[in-house]
Length: 370
Ligand SMILES: *Cc1c(COP(=O)(O)O)cnc(C)c1O
Image (cartoon, rainbow, N blue to C red; front, side):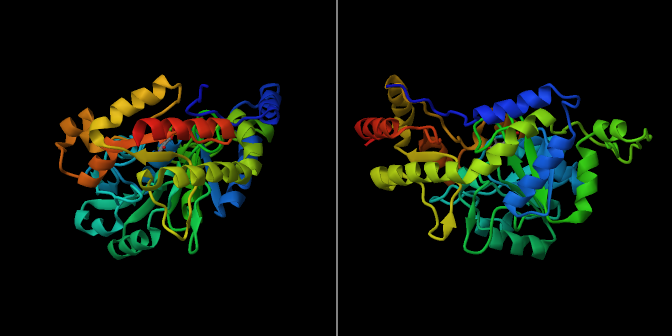
């Protein structure tokens, strides 16, 4: 048996929708993107969505929308994909890491306050694997210190708890539609917000600061566009939007399947699993186990020898070469993130995984890692 680490979930209808756009006049940003933005806002329960070409650019534009750049600091987690802190560097600011909780791997909200300086402008929490960060504590700190909150929700489309949903407490919330995420537009992302004051600017910022995109310039009587502000190149294409549209309708059924698999893994792997707080509905984008640090890489290779796809999400970012050399971070700075980063293994988790494949993964992990 061979178990892929991940399989996307595009179906024939999604592919046909993309073909229809490819046969049409407007391939890039236009009506299909508008349609996607409305539908995604409804799903998330946000007032506005701005479709962009990646979550990385969504995070970057969010920082720029708040004029964050040179000389500023943004607080985030070392237990995430490098896109999160890289977007801060790209904006010209400094990523300041705060250690994580041992159970969830999420940023430890109670350690944030001591990392705040006069230069701190924003907090960028990540809902790791789809488990919600403690957003109430974060929003209270942000209010006290007048900081912006930009949620990295790349793992967390479906996440909610008894009190709030993903996106409710962030000023801006960023999503990824990369192929390994819950829904995909190949290379695509989005920003959601309830703050009307940011919306027009973000629409312009995704497209060179122009106040009309190509489809609006050519469909009505020609009007000159204005360059209202400095902007970037981060617009979503109609092709991406066409792939995403119908996937939104399947988010919940796909989540159900991933959740059942994850619960079964939890029942089999017990203490090796990360924890989900009792009131949280986790998005379940990834499933990770913790093993002994000195055996981790050996276990990875043995699982691969059994033809099981595995990954590491993530090694602690502050120990990666660029971050060590650029910011002087070193081993011991964030011990909990280092511990998780040294011990974690990601197992296959996606709706197309069959029961037989799940059983095979469980059997091999028990044989090799327990
Ligand atoms: C995938 C991912 C991103 C980047 O998404 P792109 O759409 O590929 O730019 C950002 N943050 C996290 C936590 C991710 O997993």
